[in-house]
Amino acid sequence: MNCVKHSDISMDEKWKRRDLFGFIRATMWVASMYPWNADNQKTGFLKYSIELLDVCFEIFNYFVCGHIAILYICTILINYDKGDLEFIVNCFLQTIIYIWAIFMKLYFRRFQSKLLHETISFMNEKHQIRSARGFTYVTMEGPIRFTNIWAKSLIYSCQVAALFWLALPIAYRDKSLPLACWYPIDHKQPIVYEVIFFLQGMGQIQISAAFTAASGLYMVFGILISGQYDILFCSLKNVLATSYLEVGATLTELRKLQEAQSVADAELNQYSYAIEERTPLEELIRERDANNITDFSASFNRAFKSCIAQHRFIIAALRKIERFFNPIWLCKTGEVTFLVCLVAFVWTKSTSANSFIRMLILGQYLVLVLFEMFVICYFAELVYQNSQRCGDALWRSPWQLCMRQVRSHYLFFIMNGQKHFQLTAGKIYNLNVERFRSIITTAFSVLTLLRKMDARGNL
Image (cartoon, rainbow, N blue to C red; front, side, top):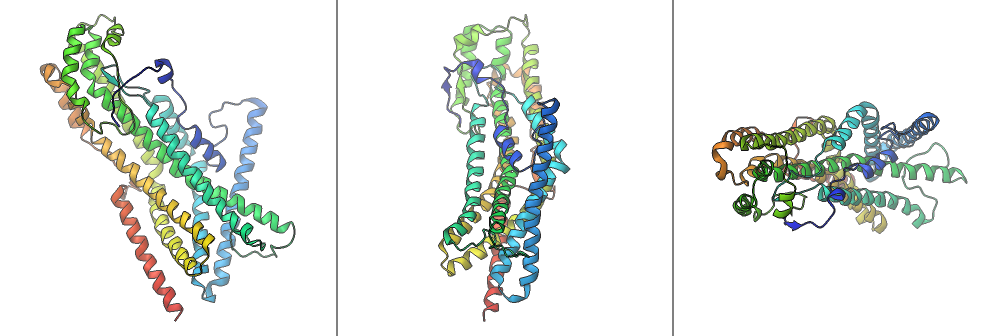
């Protein structure tokens, strides 16, 4: 998005710093993946009360997910020799899901909680709200709006899919359970059934929250980093205008520079999420610095160092994100491969049995699993592409007008900016759209093998 607009919104309102992770943090609270009082905003008795409730809620969630995973393992062992491959595959599917959810909770809350808090705080405190002054500027309004749209769409969709599992017993009215696993007691007894139904319902909500908290946080990071790249690109394009303003250029000089730069404004797809807005020349004249800088080289050095600092911030944030997520995504790619295969297998079996509601639920599950993996690969690809475009953004400025003063700085930045950043899975292979295609291919190859095994068992 790169349409240039005139802004009539209050600058104080547009540049206001805000919490970038409010919604996704709430999702992590529900999943017991982030402390309720991580920022130490509460003190005294209220602080200890919140921490106690937080720990109790965390233990309860571990119990809910852990006991369901154990029951499914017992179900597999009891029914292993009965020849019902569809039932065994379905139990294995649920076992993987619940074990993965427990691992995610432990990883976020216990293993890497310090790094997670550091990364979120680093982004909140150090991110740039808008680009440097110039003929055009971008802000974080667009990226923040997209984080809300994407994150809420993913989380609400997964919650609806989880609640659909609870609709099956209600539709059948036969006192069946949402999750068909073995219990050592008669689950149809009064009160017992309601308690077990409640625990399984909580389990499904926790599964949804855990999955969407991990991929949703990654998605938010990806969009916010892209927004920071957009701000950097706009600052680089306007770096000469920023320098002119600092030396107190006249309206004629600014108009000549603007005409030379206007060629770059027509280029499409300069920004990922930000909307570029134009600042009238009269307003720029009123905002000129009165800092007695008369040397263009000194003012250019000052403006250019701000761009370098922004680039270093982005790289530092990406390194934290890569350090936190790369072990998760190494396991995630394998887990998604098996989940896609198993869900597709059970879905095809449900189709043959004409179970419409079950087919609908499993179809939703399959789409959500694929969408989650696509999100992981897509935003890694987006970060990689943005990391390669810093030099292109710099060339959009009318550098030819001041080639003697800026040549060495441009060459230095372009040579260092060519080093792309690639998010990885366990530092073993890169995450990108091609990896997503490879995962789907592998999953359906395993699905074909499962269907052949099932066909042989039915002969």
